[in-house]
Length: 497
Image 1 (spheres, rainbow, N blue to C red):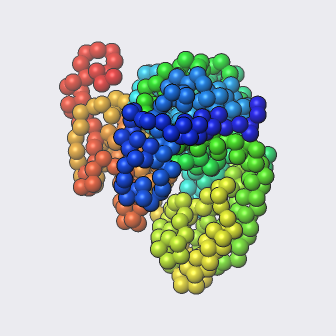
Image 2 (image 1 turned 60 degrees about the vertical axis):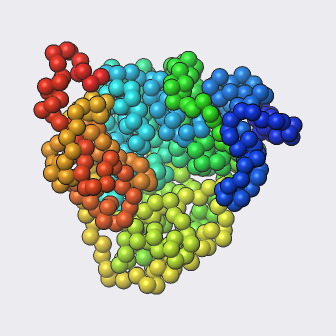
């Protein structure tokens, strides 16, 4: 297909140039209303913010320029179909799990998945078979589960309908997706991929393989995270006949808004053209810039920039070269402190922090100026906080995940007992609690609170990290098990279905 085309963007331009009188929503009517935000971002942002006028197609039933734009996106990924998403990759993950598994059906899934996958389990009622990731006890982060553990889960659960994979993890690690997909398909299982941090893989031979090229059936890819569209715009991809167009379509009809943003849709169309035409060249530049940055950081006392070699030594099959994972060494501050100091003192915004790690994500908009500002900031921190003979206390908490006692949807719908966090040991959680970013839950509905999880939650709070939980008063939402038993009834299935 002609990847130089931008059918939706062109139609939007045509509509704007017609200077129409508008009596539809939104109320600002192409910017004929004033406010402080419009004064800041400019008239054009509001002018192109239209709803679904004649000629611009309909996201929930595309048949014209949007369908053409989606077909161009599918062509880029060697997929059979692409669906534009305007509620992030989270909506794509919800849709593909809903399309693949139903209540009481099993899905094999890594426990270090994003919260959207847990929400999909709650909505669908599916039974998770969790595969535990490998832990890097040096950096204290979760990597991929091993291929062997995935295969073991497949063999032990031949009735599972699907498996879910992350391509790549937040920190850039990938697994042998071709081999795993082949093995899963041989056992009649659908393969779903979370490519929130891997949308750019399809546009570079130097990066790991994309999910569609690996043979996966569905993939949700955050075009905004790594391929240049506006925040919240993503794409859901489908290939093969294991999941039908209809199943995906009806799931998206439940999730999608009926008022999609034309800014987000047009940004997907334009970013796809850029990546298709210039993406490979640009990715080469960004990979070189990331490598330059690693080399310079490794000259700074107190920091080690980890890359492909390190992650492959720690069980990863492949690695995203655009990620720069910076390990702290012999500093009197932790990763959360470094994250704050870089922003507050040096105007450098990092992606996230952990106790001994800060993460930099290099994208198609990264510049050498950005890299040099980061390097300068780390040098300043090193001068102030590096202590050559200081050793970090490792393994400050148990980084394993808690045991599962109840299916996520059942726990979510069960009666509630609100208790203080420190009194929750042994109780079943009704909520997902996570540090954000990255949005990987520490505990999910149906899992049992233990002392290690409570310590970990408190640790994140003490560091100033953003901890997402139901309440801000030191309490948590747990299952009132006595009331659950009373109300469960005599039916074979839980009444909380």
